[in-house]
Image 1 (cartoon, helix red, strand yellow):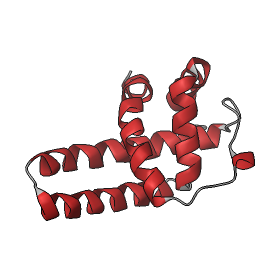
Image 2 (cartoon, one colour; image 1 turned 90 degrees about the horizontal axis):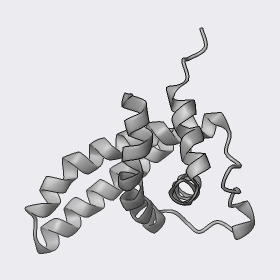
Image 3 (cartoon, helix red, strand yellow; image 1 turned 30 degrees about the vertical axis):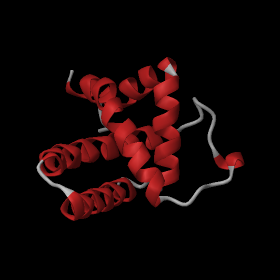
Length: 125
C-alpha cells in the first residue's frame, strides 16, 4: 500500500520537482527522449527512489519557502533545487531522464500502473 501511494501520490511532487530539475539540467536532444513505455524496471525503481527523496526534500523546504521573503527565499529555493538534483543523481538517473520519466508518467496511465507494479514487487531473494 505504501508504494502504491508513492507511485500515485508522489507524481504531484514529481511535477514540481520536474520544473525545478529542468532548470538545473542541460537540454538533451529530442532523439534521446524515451517513448512513454520505454523505461526499464531498473529505471522505474530509480525513479521511485528519487521521488521518495524529492518528497522528503519538498516537505522539508515547503515551510521554509513559505516563511521566507526576497533574497532569503531565493537562497532557500537554490538550496532546495541543489538537494533535489543531488537526490536524482544519487538514484542513478540524470536529471533529464528523471524529467522525461516524470512527464511520461503524468501522461501515461499504463506507465503509472507499471511503475506501481515494479515498486510493489518483492525484491529478489
